[in-house]
Every structure is written in structure tokens, then in C-alpha cells.
Image 1: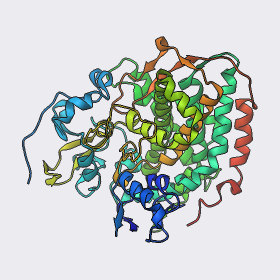
Image 2: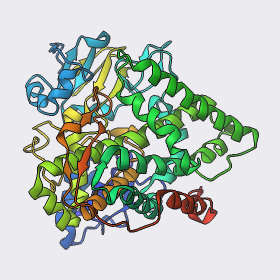
Image 3: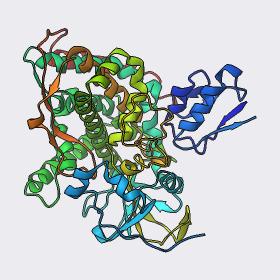
Image 4: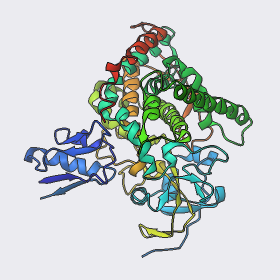
Length: 64
Length: 437
């Protein structure tokens, strides 16, 4: 699984970091989300999927 | 494909019927939605569908937040207020609004907010200490009005003790209906508050800078292509921070404490499983939606989500109703403390997302946590509950009295806490990281 945060859509709601704190990091500048690596470890796939489902802006994009 | 078939409903978020019917009236509207037309306030669209609202919020190029009578733009309040200045960057469109958000963001990111946690805990405990031996509290007057107000003073760089100057007008300007007899006095208080802010800004400008670190100083020091920010924009932004910082968190806290009192099992669960506090906070924001909606003006004829809008149309994004859209939230009428995913619109959506959301969460969780820990058997005095007469702007409470088994004080007095923290926030080290750019 790969994950990407669309910086145009992310508005810093921070709910992704609640779902998968090990994957999504929040900018000190504006609280917007980013990932250090697009590759999602298998044991975190479920929580990343939950993060995508809870993003109010639909800013988290998952691909195979 | 678009439809011009307009569904007209008798709807007014400022009316007593809305206050009495929220949130259940979302059920009546859902079959008519996701967007309906109201003839009140000169006519406006009411967007109640969660997905349509999200689409509109993504289009600041089509839906303006600006308030500019010459352009026919009415700003974010429906009806549009007469005579008052713009409401800071919330009533600006891009790119102008970013001139201000860029300055405020570093004060309000999750990392920046964490530095205020010890202050908020001390303040909450001092507020509870003041009443803990009496066995009686008004959760609004004695706690939820005070903590966010003092915190906002600190963020702005005003003396912490000045919270009393702004507290009453900041709440009254939200809950007083313009057609009520109290409005004249409220209006005078607001004018005095606005004049006070203008004087503070003018004095700091004359002195060559604000006396303390904080948002006021940052706004005065900011330069956009070499030029300082517009004076009206700064004053409007300060009023916005005070309005947003004072009233919304108060409303959320009061609603949650009142609901938890009526749902004892959930209250015991939340008290014994503090790890639920994160999802519970989002769920309370969804269910009660302190800021009930936001107005827009259509910039040009367009079709969004299959719905046609005409240039100049007024639109009200009903966050509080979209948060009860059954298409987006299973069992929307239930509070589920562990609801997740929860893609609520309670902080707004799009580029105008509540800039203080992280601060609000932290303050709310702290106040709620301290009450649950120190007044575990509190019981609301139902006869003394006073909700706002008009919840169409902020879904809040004026008073929420309760009683509980008396306890013991655990810390210094409120004034001592204020004094100690005034020194702390005066140190540059406290603000480390804010001027990163």
C-alpha cells in the first residue's frame, strides 16, 4: 500500500494523525499533514485506511 | 447535469424553532436537501448535505467569504450585518486571507498549542478550586467562560487579567438578538471593545512594536511585499480571534457537560477510559457544532454537485446540519464517544478551516478532564440552564449551574496563577519556534 497527502486539499484537521500517528506527521508551521515515506508498512495499512476514511477534506490518497 | 428545481422551506437558523428543533430538524430537511432555499433574510440557499458542503468549501473561486457591499458580497453572517467592518481574514478571499493566516498559523499548530497545556491545566484547576469547597458551580460563568478567555489574552499578547474586559461583550455579541431590547447595551459594549482593540493597536504602532510577544506583535511586525498589513484587517482579525477563541470552546464544554450529566453510563466510561477523549471530542464537535454555519456569496453562475447557483446568491453552509446528514454519519442522532472515522464539518471545511481548532481541542479536553476528575458526581440544576436565545451563530449556553459533593483546593488562587503565568509568557523562551520564518 502507498499513501500520499494532497497538499492542496489538506487543511490541517489533524484527524489522520489520530488514526495513524506513526505515519502522518503534522507541520509545526500550520498543522498540515505529510508523510515521510509513501510506503505503508503492512501492520499499519488498516489504520492508514481509517485515516483516509476520516479525513474531512478527502486529502489522503491510497494506492496499491 | 443540473437542476433549477428549487425546494423552498421555511427555515431561519436564528429563529426559536431552530433552537428548539436542533439537531432533530436535520431529519426533516434531509429528504428535501442537500440544498434548500429560504426566503428569510432576503433569500438564501441552505446547504445541509455533507458532500455538497464539502464540494462548495473547495471552491473559494466560486463562493466568496468577502464582505463588500460595493461588490454585493455579504460575508459570512446571514443576514449580513450592517455597518460593521469585515470580520478579519474569515471575511477575505484568497490570496488576501493567507496574509493573516500565515502569521497566525505558527501560534496555533498542534506543536505550538502544546506549550499552553500547563497554563490551561493550572487555570482550570484554579477555577475549580474557587468553588470546590462550596459544592456549587456554574460551568459557564465559573469555568468555561474564563479559561479560553485568559488563554486568548496570552496568545494575543495582552495582559492575562484583561480577560474580564473582553469576556462579557464577546459572548453577548453572539447571543443577543438584534431585535431584542438588550441589543442597544450589547452594541455599546461591543463598540467599547472595538475601540479598546483599536487603541491597543495604535499605541503599539506608535511605540514601534507591541510590548509583549504574541499575535498582536506578529501582526504588526508582518510585512507583505514590504508593506505592513492593513490596519482594518488587523483589527478585524483580533476581533475574530477573540470571538472565535472565547465563545466556541465555552459552548462545546457546556454542551458536553450537560449531556454527560444526562448519560451517566457514558460519563463513567469517559472518566475511566481517558483514551476515549480524542474521539469523544470530535464527536461532541460533530453533534453540537458550536459554530453552526458560515455564509458565502456566489461569485459567478455555476453548477456544483449538480446544483445551479447564480452570481450574487447568498449561501449558508449549515455545518451543524451537515454533521447530522444520515448519508455521512450512521446513527447521526446518537453520540458515540468512540465514533471513528468521523469526517465532521464542525471546524468548517476548506481553506477557512477553524484556525484555532487545535487550541480548542486542548482547552476542551483539559476542562472536561479536570471536571470529571474533581467533580465526579456533579449534577446539573436543570432549572438554571440558560441556552443562548439564538443558536444560529454559536450553539451556546449563558449559564449551566450544577452541584456536587464538595472537595478540597489543590493549588494556588486564580490571581496567583495569573500572576505566575504572566511572568512565564513574558519570557522569549516560552515562544520559541513561533518566529521560525
